[in-house]
Image (cartoon, rainbow, N blue to C red; front, side, top):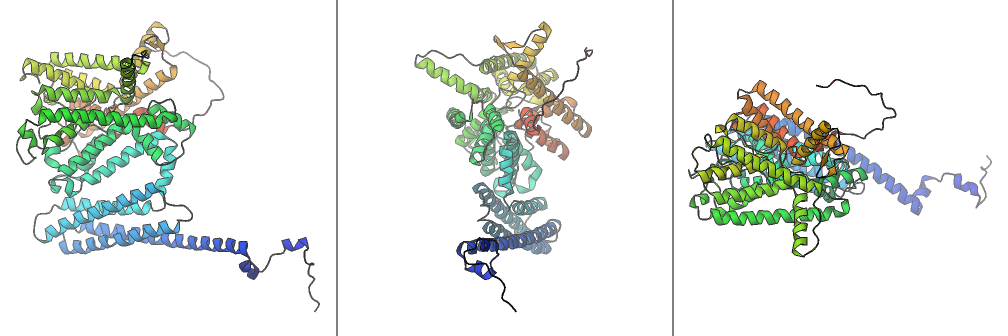
Length: 631
């Protein structure tokens, strides 16, 4: 047989001839390429096996958790199921670490996801320990609440499943998608903080008696704290230990900073790239001209918060220290007991007041302090400062510095002038209304100076904070309706409070006045842009629709008076926290509805509208106009 023809050496056609596999393995660059391809194939195989093992582990966790949950009455069977569930935590950790190792060369796990997984693992250990402590108590014949045990089992199962679901870095991708829309990131941040806070509040170290608090109560209290609302289903002093109160204090601090700084801080810390549109929205949320000034503004916000809360805590401590009952714990019967020390009481109430959180770690709340005018007015000042909004505080600070240095005073912005004037009118008018309407009702037992003190204090709290020095349930219906209006308006934009905001009310008033006169809306010799008017109308409409919808559902399923329910819903939406006392008696459905209402009110109707809005499409044509009969 003749030999096959071979191209001569150096012929360019050699480039088109595929070399044998041996030559590939012996060649340098080609060998590297084949090695990478082989490693990629192996990674794909490992990826698939990891996915299968994760699926098997997921099924095992659900089965073991279900057995542990439903066999709680059968002690030794529960021990076996609990041992299996606890043992599954070991392959759970191994699966997470192996997954991370396989993808190390392809998609490194971001530090934020690793931090989240470490925190998740810590909670798994904590709830496993809490579960076994209750189970061992039951085996020794000691009373152990089954409801708390089942709560801990459900928490362990849920945390394990969350860890498995997020093992591939879905949190990083979720943050990346959310960072393009800060409004969505804000909603996600508050929801996550509320959920993690509920888990921490459900731990035995946070509770005085684990058998008296359900997980729903923990969730309600956590959301109420992070949304700086102040509605409570349990008594803070009687229910939570120092650790639990510290968790509530931290949640209030996060919630107070949230609407101004939380979204921007999380976005920048996540290291995500923000688009031009999202940058403009985010800069508007914190009232800066551009993202260049964003870090400077965030530092100023944190500085103001620390300074005001530190000063408030100092002044409160000086006034609380002489009161011996304040240093008593919740085991003591006094209405001022619960904090355990005057220092902790001062810190807790300073944070709660400035952030408009409205929670108190005194057994009787602020009612026993109705005669302590200095304490009441200190809290009122902190509440008003928190309700002013950091943009207003920032502008007033620069104006004060200019005046001290003898510089020419800059003109206050329209936003600041509207906020200051509207807030002053609302506070003064509500104080007069409280004094006139409640002197013979809820203020009846107070002296004349006490009535004035209570009227001023309640007027400061009516729009933003749920502190009260009198029984709200004893107020006249007319006073409750006026308070609902004040709560619905809320405080200033960029503040720690909720509501539709004072500037929205002022723009609506200017728009209505201009419509009657046939002119463009103006305030302080400035024309209000049409886009601002549309936004104000949208915020007011969405807010009213949400309150009416929740109120309708509550009137169907609850037996309480309609006015009391309306007051409760408005307080939850505006994150004010004033209540007539019906919150603990609400059904499970109503409490869950109020949780969602608090989240909606804290994030804000405008933010929700931005989160739900997609890209605006330009309309290629306009329809002809036609008149419609109005009125």
